[in-house]
Image (cartoon, rainbow, N blue to C red; front, side, top):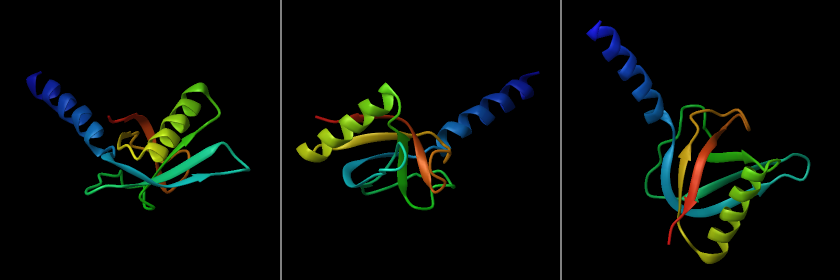
Length: 108
């Protein structure tokens, strides 16, 4: 029984570690006119993208209040020169080669 519990804990702990986590400044921002997708790159010293994110970008949709809040935060950070922290979603469902965002925040 202890082996089963340990296996389950290790399995679930490893999934979170695969998601991209990074701190840096917004470099490029791609806003599509034909869809609700936004993709962006950041300037950072190290990256931890999930395997599907071959473009080294993050992506999210602006069709919800949450997505609009993320876009506002990115635009503010870019304009103010503030750094941001990104926690990736460990998937590339929004745009095949860009990691989905779980959450982000703007640093002081």
